[in-house]
Image 1 (cartoon, helix red, strand yellow):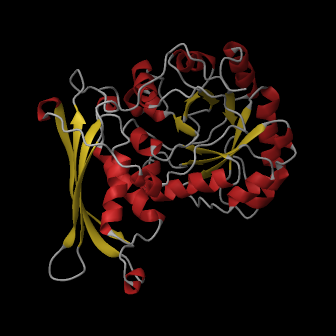
Image 2 (tube, rainbow, N blue to C red; image 1 turned 135 degrees about the vertical axis):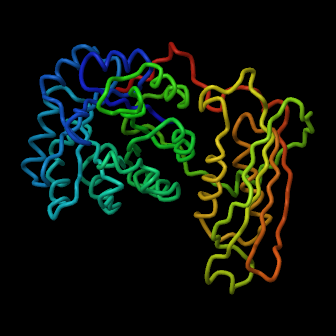
Amino acid sequence: MTLMLASVTGPPEAEIALAHGADIIDLKDSTNGAFGAVSPETVRATAAAMREHRPLSAVSGEVPMEPDALLAAAGAMAQAGAEYVKVGLFPGARRMDCIRALSALARRAKLVGVVFADVDANQSLIPVMAESGFAAAMLDTARKGNGGLLAHKSIPELADFVDAARAKGLLAGLAGSLEAPDVPRLLLLAPDILGFRGGLCAAGDRTGSLDPAAIDEIRGLIPVDLRRMTRDRSAPGKVDYRLLAARGYSVDPRRDDNTDRVFVHDFVLPVRIGAYARERDKPQNVRFNIDLKVLRASHAPEHMRDVLSYDVITDSIRMIVAQEHIALVEMLAERIAAVVLTHPRVASATVRVEKLDVGPGAVGVEIVRERSAETAKVHHLFPVAAAESDPKAT
């Protein structure tokens, strides 16, 4: 499950974020750059106001990549009461030295190493973070006016980042001008943390005030994580689409009058596919046509949580084809059907997969797979658990 991190400027905003269900309160001076730090006094005041209701984190600021300077800045946040300290690992000749210098602080504070998708997000830093005792690795953006996280990294690239962090025993976080439509797409990757600031503010202005309605929209898209946030908590495993496809689905024809159709047509990607040895040399163009019968909600759609985004379909395809060479189009079609049918409101899936480079025409397969009536229920795509549940970390 995924925790929702809300970046706030001090005690008043922290109280708003808490009241509207944020899992982690993160202190940041949003008027002073992408990674501006608040004062230690603000950290202390916020910690006192929160009274340990949720984990408190704070950014160390945009500090030069000098070990002593970074250690002092991060140490000040920990000393003031931040349980988690987010350390910005900007490009610099001494970046590796800075990470290692923080190992002493990592024994008494939970450090989150933040790298930036738009300024050299080097994944080779992740093993060094793990060796130095960091608790988490997060991918963010440094230039907030230059597009969000998905403008700089594809879904498969983000999946690689999450996998790399998990492989080293670190929690994996994603942030960077995230908006409500990004949430269903990123939940496919099952990150431990999704971080927000601008998406929680009025008109998306990260330097403005928090907007309770915007917080509610984001919160409604992320299922509440009932587990405690600890370094040792078990992380969800990587999705194995081969096993998922092998499960099969019982056929349950249903009337069309209670379903809507969501579709993706003529979606073309280069794919490593084919049973011949020669087909392993380079990717082939493959066209996808996906038609889903989606159970109709009980009210007109008003929010992202009321719909099944077509981005979830295309992102699922990208993730599947990025994993490995696939021998058969039938195998690829089964994996796509399997993953889209995991979404609660999808009643049936028609998946057409065509190889386009084998001759003058296209060849492929079309399959139809349906869910059983017992598991296909009308409810929100990502339902929220009971409000009284307490996801507080310790």
